[in-house]
Image (cartoon, rainbow, N blue to C red; front, side):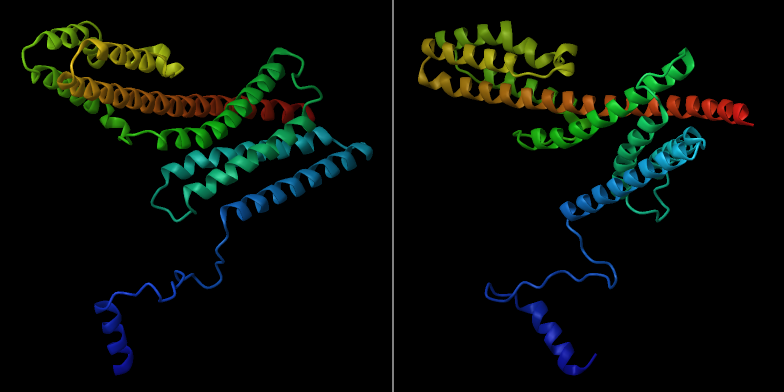
Length: 304
């Protein structure tokens, strides 16, 4: 590095860039263009559509030439299932440079769409005849449906969670619930002795204290709603007619604690939903892979 270049570098480090200076884009690696997410998605959709059209054309060509089109579509479907299983393998091989997990997730998504086309060509009807083939077809449709549900869930859940007032870690939600219960007890204990304190303390001991100390119900975890939150806030608002302004500040704090607690419960419900879906989808995919392997072995033996 020359003396002039070194001096210029030191000057840039000492003097902050002014507002009028042009913003330089981050450097990119030569040969690796930066694609936007929308462009990558359209490219993936185009590749999937082209591959599906080629699959349908090849299937019709083999069928019209009196070939074994079922062997062709079944082989493609088996290859798709093998590629779909590689996502789980990639998640466990963190140290190896095998593309980011996000890339494999996109491959998993569009390979699943392509596998649905191969399944439609391979199976004469949506539910095949016989308990073995029929059960395998129903299992494939169930895994596919859970995959589409997972796409919708992974797109909608982050938007809903980012709109909440709190963003806790999933493993710290129980701790935050405990801190809220302690803060609510301290807010009631700090009230001076008066008739208004008796009013709000009676309501707190009867309704709010059990709410802050309890866990969310299974019904709420399965279907989280704001019914209980709205009911408690309405009762607190109605209670404001019987207390003076000094105690109203404590009522407002309790209302804030209710909103905070409901946001924590919603975080936990959505976290359980995401984790539960992943466990069910993974387990069903493993069963589908084993069942399909047995189907391939039987079909291969019948062909030969």
